Structures are given as C-alpha cells and as structure tokens.
Length: 196
Image (cartoon, rainbow, N blue to C red; front, side, top):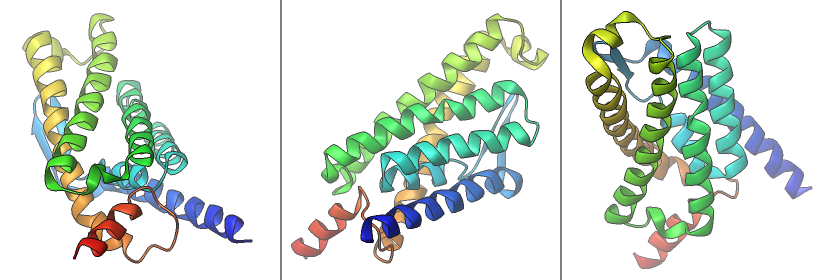
C-alpha cells in the first residue's frame, strides 16, 4: 500500500508543478531583450521536479510543454519548452545516482551550471533550426545569428537557468523538510542534519 501512496503523491505533486509551470509565464515578470524575452522563475517547477525523481521531472517538463502548446504559443516556443526534457531528465538521473550534488554551495553551483549549459545548448539547437529555416520573426534576422541566437538565446538561457536554479534551491530546501515522499534530494537533507 505504501508504494501506491507514494506513486499517487508523486503524481499529484507532478500535476501541481505542471500547473505552476503553466501559470508562471502568464504572471511572472519578464525581462525583454529584443528579440528574446525571459520569464523570471519559469523553470523553477522543472528544477523542483528533478529534485524529486526522474519520472516527476519527465512529467513536469512534458506537462509544461503541453501547456505552451494548448495555449497557442508559436511552435518554436513549444519546442524550446520540450527541450527542457533533456536537462530535467539528465539532472534527475545524476541526482538519483549522486545525492551529494546539492550538499554544498560549490557542488550545487557546479550542478546548476552543468544543467544550465545543457539547457542553453538545447534551446540554441531548436532556435538554430528555425533560424536557418527562415521561420523566426524578422527581429531575429535584423540582429543576426550571433547576437539573436548565440548571445540572447544561448547566454541568456544560461544566466536565466542559473537564476531559476538558485530560486529552486531556495524554495526546495525548506519545502523538502515537509514533503513526505522519497525524493532524490531528500538524502542531502539527512546528511546536513547528521552533520549539524
């Protein structure tokens, strides 16, 4: 019975994180650097999901992508959201294998930077395909590939992702003390308590 309860709780948390991931882009502040824009905290639900488990990370990254799709966002935005599956799954699997990745500031920063780099490369790949297929807004072409895609999408996503990772850690640490399900990152807290 306990395994069924755990699966049900994980499913409910994944659904809540999907809902939050869909709502955040509607209401959170945006930083606009033409032609790109960045929504503060938009990746927080995905990072929290990857702290929980690979299935929850997969469900939330796919669920938020479907939210963008059904909300009628341009296909390039939907595919950029779908690319989050890659960093979410890699992060969740790495954290499952090595629960100490969040045990110190240095390890957390390195882990966040790795995930942010994967995130940025994934989004650059999606936008590059659309850019060279002449399917991007004219503002992207006016600024050129280097500025529009490599700097704004690539470097912008790297920085945005690191900020959202930091917010996620800030939210996750106290939250994980009250969540009563087995999670990837819970082992870190047990080790922290043992050290204190």
